[in-house]
Image 1: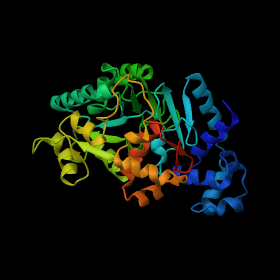
Image 2: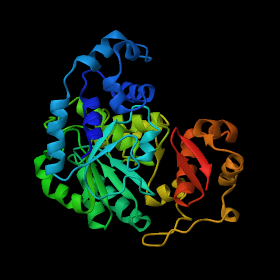
Image 3: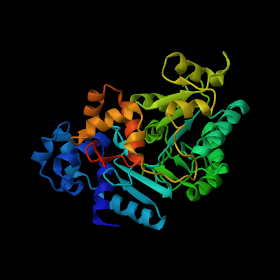
Length: 365
């Protein structure tokens, strides 16, 4: 492990310095190491920092704890991923509050071509489990990476269905990678490390406290192309994930349930409130996500010819013909929503047509 990792981890350990402010500090100071070596007066001038946060950066001794974490990482063969690393999920980079650091155990590609998050109630019914299993089974031919939170109910059902169908699956933790919670899911977690992975933005020794779960949910929502709610009660935690996905301009889908069913009330409500699109099967996902034209599992990926582009893709190609353009400007020029442009650019990037650059910039290959 290089010395830079110590500064990266230390940055996340500074009390009251969250992900947004931490990334701003790195941007203004030039590097993560420079944040810790910068003068107080300079730190205070960084927008949102001021004297209190500047004191936190200067006065807190976080390097001892960072060194301990590095030893844990090395001993347990964990991959640390900084937000500026190539391995960091590109989809998450479009989310302002995305984690500064991620820790992964496993071998999944966090930038897989198709990533779907599946969430739902911990008290899943047999009907909900059957829906989840069939959804994953029917999507398997498209080889998506399945993401969930390894919780009871729909989460663990989605992970197991992915494993049984030969798909890679990622479990996102609300605690460190030194434990599996709930412990009864440890056998499934061990399988996932060989066929996907376990992911967290928490350091070891972090307990699965209640307040950590919404923070976990932003990763579940942010690293996926779409979030699917299978079953949810009126105030279910999976609705938080759906809300976050909506705030990120990601697609949200939900299965409807019978009127009056407690475990479907949350799904019915977000459909009624236009916070989720109603789906009845995997075919709906395939159609809405535009996967019909994508080669299915194990088929080689070939660079598309510009002649084969969809009309909306042709618009983006025209915009990028002359110069490198920021995604926000692409949305304005193309007169398309961020969710649509992000999806199109991601598909075009995987097809070798465009290339993403730092700063949310894009250019033609």
